Image (tube, rainbow, N blue to C red; front, top):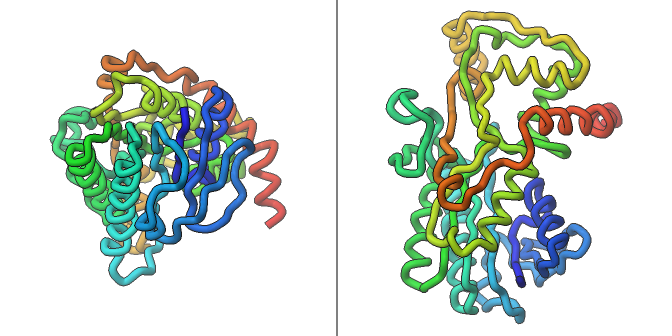
Length: 326
């Protein structure tokens, strides 16, 4: 298959591009500006910010499927005075621009990688059950709102333009090369820091990078995936303290968990301006992957224990060293 990807130079994009090329697919990358790309990936002419360059037409290349990963991502310290407008320009308007150009070029399938945040920050019905695709989304922050609005806009485009749409909603993605919050957690556990989250029993879904890549591969090639939205995860939801204990074991360090009462943690978050970060450690956020299991027969190929071990090994070998050089 001929596949065009956006976001091919990102954490997920690089892994997916390598897997697609390894299976014999031809992969080309749409980027805002020239960047280094994984081996075997062809660089298409840059499209600029928010896919503005797509108004000039589709690249001179027959394409079977587009995998859309690029997005304005969630940031902890937002500096834009109108963050929702900024997210909408890139995530909504830019995605529609890309989809319309793809449909006009005869692309058959469009795979959009959304986010658990399109559903919400908390489980539905006060935690009565994990998020299912059939639940009414209730996103709370500008990033989540923009991802949900993008899903709706792309669904309208696909119906209007006769293109197959597949939407995939991953939770937190981890694995070798991970950055952001998960890497900070790896560092904290590796340095045996005291973590005041021992009283939390919040279970949160995650997905190993190789498991997400496998699910996306299925969504690219399987006819049965057309028209569906899928939640994906490792299928095991650890509590945050249990995640710390597991990482500590794989890193060869003692877990140093302190059971600070949750109301005190919440108060500390309010006073320090870090309430959102605290809530991510103390609020459950699980997703149900029953639908992709039923429709595609998909199961995460890598067990979470092995996935966490691989991530810890990478951190000890490479991640730790790169931090020491900073």
